[in-house]
Image 1 (spheres, rainbow, N blue to C red):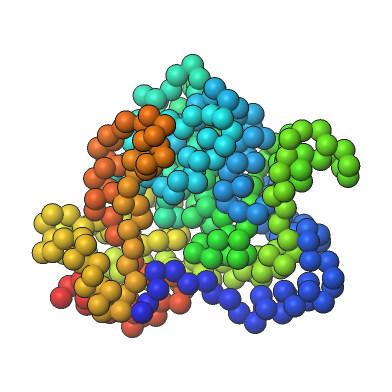
Image 2 (cartoon, rainbow, N blue to C red):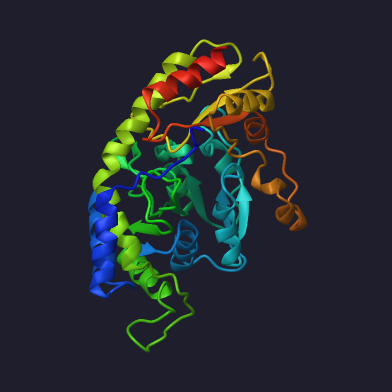
Length: 361
């Protein structure tokens, strides 16, 4: 079976971990600082704060940005639930705006419709590694004096008009889960140019302490270990190579699938770099079989295929219990039609040909 995702771990990562184990310093230490420095340089921000996961990075970022009970944060309903959950963790309320039908990202025009006197921030998601329309989103945020936070958990190395995502808004958030474009096993990163947010994030991740035994606020144990950071330092060195393989695999898939009735291939916007954390097509009613039937045929051929995401966040039971009652057209349609297929660096040309041949057949 060609898996939908697979981390690329080499001898370099194994040696780096062994070196940390041999050193005896396995908690947060110099390797974490090295990863932070390297990642900040890669994204082109002044600061990067390593943390335990993409979810804890979102939570910490929102807290450090002043999001609190009674606030509203506008975000997308078409993503993993961690994005919206992190808003709830702060006592605030997620407000869902519809997506763009072509990119699956939040539609800037629908953001403005959702703004109220309680709105404090916009939390965008660069879904599947495809950058959002940041100029238009920044224009809305500036007009209404809103914070702009980038959930780039699936978009390491993606670019919008030559600028890396995670460096465009007030803060960026990344995940290093094994399905991402680079991994630390579990882990995440916050990026920002704001010195005050950087300081608060570092306090929050360490039990609210501003120095040893000096707690100044409520915090959490969100520290990354040097073991994880050692993997991350080596992965970051390889990230550009991983991305190029993903982009090349996506190009081959686009070429092989274009023109098939009922299949809509991913749209790459001008002046952007889509890094294809997932390769996601749309399977419409014009295709010969249903999406579920296509998934089964792909699996029968040994191809891992998966639906991200079959249910908008506002239709999850927990959110229904909270009283959400939404019906956003583009989001609903995407949930019924999207299908992701393997595109990661371990996918070979032969694998790509098998995917193309199976769908054509």
